[in-house]
Image (cartoon, rainbow over all chains, first blue to last red; front, side, top):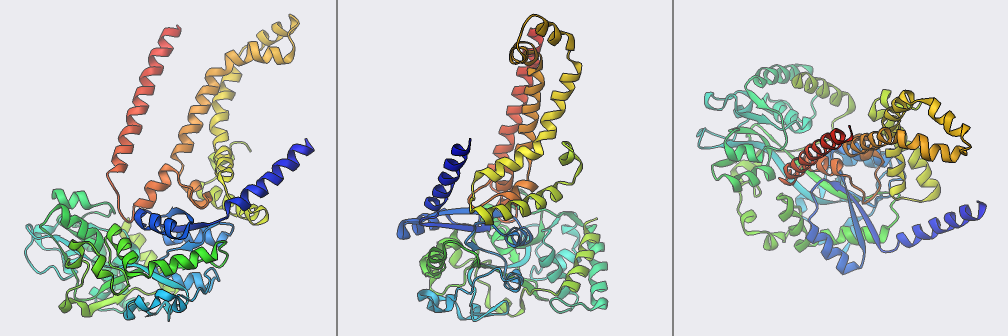
Length: 341
Length: 161
């Protein structure tokens, strides 16, 4: 009995140490990593890569805080990077000292959540706007009024993606507030129109590409990449950037402070800052990336798509998403809960 | 106590298991399928236990005593008398446990280690980005399989009478 216990313990230890040679464990959003990118990385660096999915920043944070997770790289949203850093969960990997850092788009180097890029590397970024079927509604689509004060022909055929921070951001700017405002007056002005507009909404779902393509939905709050994919199915679909202010989000890859495969992880961060590889990432989920020079490698339809390349005249009103203080988040959650009733 | 996973909210079990396994992982450095298997076994126990218990209660004890009277050892009694009477309950428990395990999202989401994914967590992960028609296909297949199994068991149980 003792002998079997001993041998099994030894073999377990040996097995784990053999396991850890040439490995990289990535913790990313579901269906967000291009398999071609991974194959390319595996071949170039002779590393075995595993990808594990998470469905929300909160799940990722909870799992990593608990410890013993075995991941090396995590790809949270920019708004959560300060939370991760504050908890000491990210390694200061200094991507700004890596070889491919020179390819990073200057506008994404000094971001509020990671000034100077000491922790993270851009994965993809996108915008939140309105998707409209132009054959149903031919008015101005660059406004959030399409959702919050819908015209007749769109009533009853609107979907709002149930992503609290994005929709709240859109709504707050629609009534004239600032990002992450805690002003009770403004928030009252947000809640009442939201609840009123909900009556004209059909659903609050994520997977809506087929519904737009078939015509069950005519308008909705959506991410630009999802809207782009919808336009491929149905050419009448257009993406509007609400001029009162549209949220901009970015997902970033970072190394965890207790990562086991640090060298491979650093090699990976350097790898995705290369323009060709950044283009691979973008071509998969169809969102823009933060690396200059990747345009040359992007798929044709993404180079000129208005969803990916924001038109000049509409650029000004972008609002980079920020991490709201906990009290403010709490109020938003209350409004959101009331909205979902 | 055995039926605790039935009563406690799933998220509580999930976080408790996460913290427990995290402590073990830090100590032993083992990250593998073992945790997932252990976690699934743990919360499937009540589902497997209840049908077996029901079957046991309905079973006739005198048969066992008769077998023992006829010089059968306890092992033989179990193998030749108890088990044949019990196997429908065991089968039902096994299938129920399988279904609950296949269905579970919350606990798996928290307990899974690097590189591990089950079908529900894979589908959940797709939710916020791309939901491919793969998901529809999988659901159809699962539905078809359950219908086929129900029909098969219907005919099987009929012929036993």
